[in-house]
Every structure is written in C-alpha cells, then in structure tokens.
Length: 548
Image 1: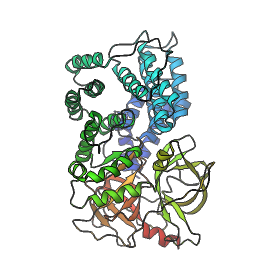
Image 2: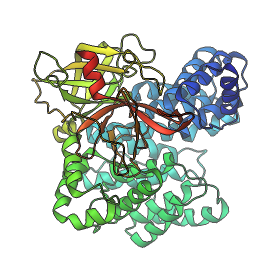
Image 3: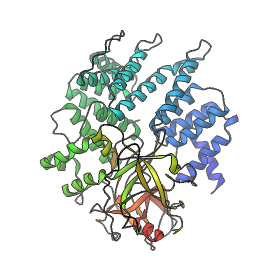
C-alpha cells in the first residue's frame, strides 16, 4: 500500500471530498485520520464525517466518531454525524444514548452557538430513531413516540420557521396514526398544517435555491394535501436539483415507502404510488438499481397479473423479462440481512443447499463474506454476536424473526480485489438456529453448475440489503464483464451499496453464480493491464471446490 496515496486521500477527506479510491485505501485513510485525531482541527473531522455519510460509508464515520468520543472533548457537530451513521447502521440504542447525552450538553447555558444550532438536528434524529423502530416492529406506541419527538422540536423556544423537516415528519406520521386509528390525547402543541409547509417551501425555494430538501418537502406537503400534480412537479424539481445525491433521493424514497406506504408497482390510482414510481424510474435510469420494501413483494407478485404496466415501467432490458421478475421475487425469501446484536446492518447472505457444496449433512446453509462474519477478520461480526433476519419472513410474521449462528462450517479470509487466491475467497459458510422459536423451514437458492460465457447478452444480477433498508435489486446496467482463467473471480458492472457484501450474484436464469464481496471504480482488470469500474464476486463453484 502506497503511504503517499493514503496521506493524500486522508487530506482530501478532511476537505470534505472523496475521490475515486480503492476500499482498502479509504479504510487506511480513515485509520490515518484517527491516528492524528488528537491534534486535528475539528473542522477537518466534521468535513470528513460529512462526506463519508453522504457516500453511505457509515462504518468509517462510526470509526472516526468512536475515536473522537474517546479522545477529544464534546463537539455537537461531530456527535451529529456520528449519530447519523449509527442510525443508518441500525445501531439505534447506541445512537439514542449518544443523542440524549449530546442534547443535554447542548442545552446547558454555557454551551456555544454551534452546539445550540445542532439541537433541532438532535431532536430530529431522535424522532428518526423512533420512526425506524416503528417501521421495524409496527408497534403503534413507537409511531406515537416518533410523532411526539418531531413535534417537540416545533415547541422549542429557539425553533426557527426553516426547521420544516420536523413539521413534514409530524404531518406524515400523523397521517399514519390516522390510518391506524390512533388518536393520542396528550399533545398540547398544535399540529402543523401541510398547506402552511407548502406555502413556506414556495418562499424558501426562491430565497434558498441551494437547499435541495425544500422541493422534497414541498412535494411531501402536496402529497398530504392530495394535490398530486403539484407533488409530482416538486418531486421533479428535487430529483433534478444540482446538489442532489443518491443518498438524498433514497431518503425521500424510503419515507414514501415506509411511512406513506408507496408502492412503485401499484396501479397509479394513489398519488404516493405515482411518486414512488417516478423515483424508481429515476433510480433505475441514473443509478441502475431498484429498491423495494419487503412489504411490497406480495403486491409486486399480484402486479404480475397486470404485466403490461409493470413491463412498461420497469423492464428496459431485453434480457429482463416478466419471468425474470417472478423468479427474482421467489429468490428474495432466501436472502438474509446480517446484523450484530445491537441491530447494526453489516452485510447480506443467502441460503444454499449444503449437499450442493459437498457437505455430508443435509439442509440449507447460510453463505456470506468472511469480512461480514468471522472470528479473525478485522471489523467482522464474530459468529457468537451475529444475527440473521430474512426480512420477507419477518414481514409476513409481523415482527423481526432472528437466527443465530449454530456452527461455522467453512471460512476463508478475504484477499485484495483482482487477486485470484484459492486461500483468499472471503467466505464464511454457517448453519443457523432460530432464536426462541421452532425449527425453520428454509428454502435454498438454486446454484448454477457453470459460469456464463462472456458475451454481449451476459448479465449478473445482485439482490442485497443495503444500509438504508429494503431489498436493492439491480435491474439495469448489469453487464457481466469478465471471469478469470481459474474461474474464481467474476467481474460485473452491477451497482451495489454498502452492506451488499455477501449478496448472491445471479445469472439470467436466477441461479446463483457467485458471492459478492467488493468493488471499486479502480478494480484491477482480470485480463490485461490497468483497472476499471467493476464489482467482484467469488464464484460459488470455487467455494465448493475449496470446501471439498
């Protein structure tokens, strides 16, 4: 590893910029920032944490936040970025404790102006924690608590009328309360009106054109007012804002899906479905991926009966047919999300028949990366601390259904991208046991007996659980790029997000060909010199050969 490159990357991060870089170089740059943390200007640390969060590299933000928390005095802005990362990693309890402590310090009379300016952010993040708990558990008490926490900000004496994201969250959550026939009687703060938020956004859109959340909030306010034409207009303004990032778009998409119940495969009769469809189409065109909530899977299956609408709106590749959609949806139930015991989402995995891998014991086994579950790989979850949730199953059960690791069957450490090493396959194969319930009825994914030929129609599809939740499915730009001569490494252009590590990689018949383990804008080519933008999987056949 070139130390000069790492130093330059660390310096760039501290300016709030993240250029194209190998994952291991980003990790080394973050560790260098941590090493120099005792003497680092706080502005540099804030900038690095901000850009890491914007690029969804939340585990790196957490690393810096943990180090700062142990070595430097309280800084409200650092605490905010740290808490944001913890929430997106689904470490809700540690995030809540951090925010509660930070709020107490920021409210002290001697606290500075910067700390006091972050109070609304702390309150909003506390509301988001309760919102995520409601989404995960469907507990109506969590729904009421989330509304109360956002509403608390609107009653703060220092609240300014541009803290509109709290008001729009109150409006959205209150609509969900109404739908669930929840009628809290304890509230004294007047509820915000969507027409007031819409009118305020119209003014701010002219006065603060750089604020990308203004058109998003206006769109949501118009949704609440059932003015769908206006909601669509504001949505397009948001999607094409010059400063909008994929993180921002997926945040609004998540709000529409999880709180308003949006379904992009709906018939379009509901306004929220129309908005969800517009975002889905935009993400497919610009990010070459599609994210759905597990709750929408039954609706999507039903939508296949009205195939014309689904095909018109989502299927743009000749190789991606309605039959592919059916097989894709069937595969989703066998794909699990890997967390630690605090609930932090750190990876994906999938079920494969143990017999196919050459194991004597019958039954499905769970396959993921060694950098996700391992006793020895740094930052991996130890088997004793790992939990697996199959979110389709949990959605049908109406509550989280967790599995613990029963036994580590096989493991092989990671190697660098582009390195065909039979002893560096970045894989852990485990058996699972239910937590506090009867034995499960697992369904294995079909495994391909051979790898596809490299030709123009060859594709590699990936389904995984990114950090923001929901199933991320790559529908477009899924070109199979190359396979190494030993048939251990598979390269493809399929886009993925953090926490997709361990996802299954499928061929066009929805058979598993590999285990996704990383990617970069500068992945070394498998044939010839140089590098290119590519993701990399370890072939399932190479894993089987190593196990045998």
